[in-house]
Length: 549
Image 1 (tube, rainbow, N blue to C red):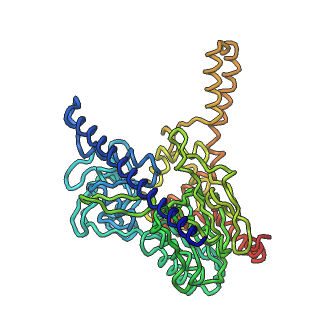
Image 2 (tube, rainbow, N blue to C red):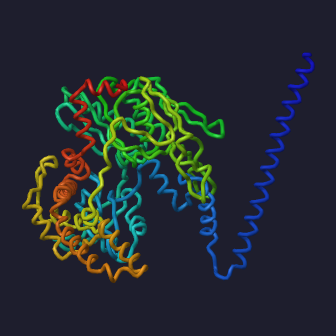
Image 3 (spheres, rainbow, N blue to C red):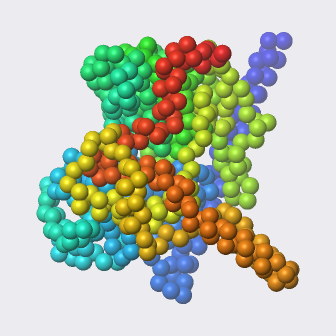
């Protein structure tokens, strides 16, 4: 009987080995066959296509199309793109330290980074760059200008700019190594509540959060709560997410597991260091722009019941990418695994494996499962991270969107900065009716036309009625509605005055005090911050949320 069992086991193992060998052989044949087909197609195009082709560009297009069939996060980087990819990973580059954008035929400075060459040389938002090192920039794209502005630290650069309200200026300075901070701001909202803005997960993100909390505690003895703001944070390095969690969670706590097809990608990540604070009340702010590493942090804080989550449901990216160095200084970013946070859930929202008509769809509700936090609160997989306290997404009115998209608010605040020497501190900037009247005067004659949803619906009605030959009979009623809409639309500036004033205050604060100023100016109107403070002021409510009551 033992011999029979032994023989059965040997046959089973042999069958498995033979199947694996056959499968490997079959895969190898398919790969070899399709590479041969691809090579033949490429050869025919290169030799016989009617127009001249660029071999490198052709191959790049083929690679990009192949990777696009997988997911949006698996990407190939040519030798020319490697520097941009390195910046994504490290947050470092050589340049002037400013963001730019295109307006008309020229590139303008969007925001100089505080403490870097552009700001030190007094470049300001709205400055139109008309020459770089004596060469005209007219017609240059944002990518063109980025390449001109970037360069090795210590190299010279001269810009000729046209400043609104001032005129032509020349700025000469040296480029520097730019390292964008993961924590652009931390400070106190009131005497008891601290605030930390985390905008990225490049190297040292965890240390920056820990240092920020340590400084807040050392300089404010009455602090008992802190807000960690992850809104709009698209993620970054996984191990830095673990380090951020470690600021608030004890050593040795499981934060995330990664599981992939290759067993080498199956890893467990736990906190490695002593935390900065295990007791301080914590609120994490998230929205639909919070993705990947932000979701590891927020999801882990929720699963471990270490703090409350406030805002909107997160993006839902539960996929992990790894870097691969390829030949000829090329690289790729490859999705190698999915991650699972402490409760065991994966927050990936879209299914890229089973696409329909080439498009990934949300994971069906029937395939989602319930999991439990440390305190047995119910959470779900397959849909991002759902906050404990849901708030409405901030949606601007049509007129405000138009004023922003057509750079009218941008132009006004730039002119304000160039014609007003100083303002109060960012927390003290308050615009009143007189300030609003000045803004109204500024926008007179400017194009900020927009269509409301009602106007769009009315236009759609007109087209359908015309198509069905009813419009002539309805034209008088249509004209009455259109005139009423126009009359109501003229009142939109007054109707949305407070919304516009708030944006003006934040933009003005940014012109004088940079990103820190803009953040501070937003405190009074920030719904999620207000909600967090409300809960902090009622510690019993905070405890009840974490206990699931």
